[in-house]
Image 1 (cartoon, rainbow, N blue to C red):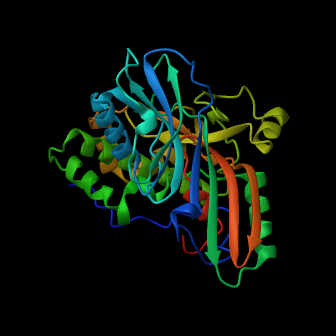
Image 2 (tube, helix red, strand yellow):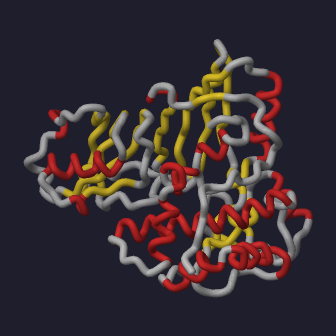
Length: 342
């Protein structure tokens, strides 16, 4: 029987009910994202590195336009991550041009796209290569209780938020989940659609695991047998003991509990920690079995998302937020801990 997922759940918030009603993206400049790459281009090599500002354009479309301008294949253009279309975003692209001849980026013209800086680098920019993203978000609201909002923001700054996959991962109105149903019921999908379906299924299961731990109020705590993630890295480890040192590292947001990104193999870790992983898989067996069938290997993702460099100000019923998030996380999961109408 194919899996049936009727819309996206309103996954459990960690810090209480929303503290005001607000709206984002009233204009593209209300939602700004700046990529923090974590390294500087080498200045030489066979790849042009382009620091690009875009508005009203998605990352894939820009990459294809750059490839066309340089007269190279789409595969010769790299970028670290997808950035929102309905926003002003700044990110790096790489374009493979071994000779460096024949393309004048200074004269590049495309509506909504500006090349701010040009350099060279020895290697193509790979997906996930950026260290973090910096957000500047303007939230428009009415009757904003500044004290209540400030109190909630302080909690978020100190404790982080549940590291859910944001609703963008599941498409408009959860539409990507229909692809999951089609794929796991035997329909052949194109490669890109299959990738979207598998990613959505995996993300849904992870969010279910995380929600159960939020409900039990242990999403930021280490349970017996827990695999901990070292903040800002893909490294995980099982501590020798859940002692005072580990507790201090948890409180300082240096390490985080993890949940399964489902695939082949038994959940890593042991004891109480992996009971949540297995319970989510048992609740949605079609999703778990489908992911295993398509050969995905099981891995781990942090359950907690630190919100770094957080600042805010109020003016004219508008809240302006600035913060940094690690690569692969979603600003909307921060906003949903504040807003009732994202």
